[in-house]
Image (cartoon, rainbow, N blue to C red; front, top):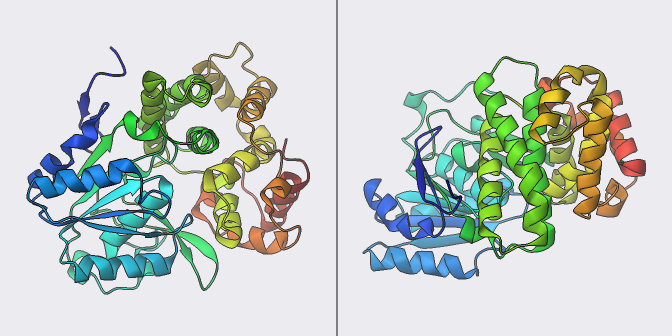
Length: 388
């Protein structure tokens, strides 16, 4: 089956995959009873040609679309509050979350708050979900990724920076699910080389971290291994041959599967990366990529039995930890990923503060090897001095 052939999937939410399926956005809105969708995206995507084309398609179908592009690279609580006001003032009745991780996180977060006056942090992932009597029904949500990396399109989870504490928290609600997802590889073709690499490694990290979480979830494990197979093979191809649409499609599907897999949980790469990004506004995928080797070394004693399946998925002959670790590092080198946090201009101080924040992240609790704040600080120092 060609990766250029349109496919419709129903798991875990309705997904339309294939080139140019973005042209079906008006049909999806009609099906969901949306007449005035608010397109939410990040600051860097607002002027891309397909955003204007989408607005024209929606207008041509008799709808009144709006656009909110005030989402920061690391979405902030203030961005979400502003977006809620735009949604309400514009009389919108649905959200199209468009972009990479930041655009989609922003759209998903706005959809949670659109009809509700509750505090944004009432939706924090570790808290008991708000009971239905305490919130108004959420507007329909459509997710459209424009990068092959975040995999954020099949859940309502959104990472948002708390600007008072300068920490990232995950917000969500189990009753808010995307009504539809469009996976259109054409939307990823124009992504610059470095962003293709950074977002692609983000997806790779999702698959690795999810697979090594110590819990029994064969559905997520299967998704993680297939994600690894697709990402490891096709990410270098896409970076070197950016117009290869089949490779773009494979990478986009791999990213989506990796996003599905981390329903199981993540690990210390994300726990640390969330806090580094919150304080220093670093690119999330790039930060993950730099932290991955240091966390893999820390986890080595706890993940040995998981290595052979991951190595096999990547097509490696050496199924040992060292073989898999070296293969990951070679891939990072091939993609020109910086060697350490110094190259990301992360300050050489405050590691203890970052560690104290990271230990509170949900990713720390599902890491296969438990870690104290002091151990996390050591990982951060290693990633700063010699990441790989």
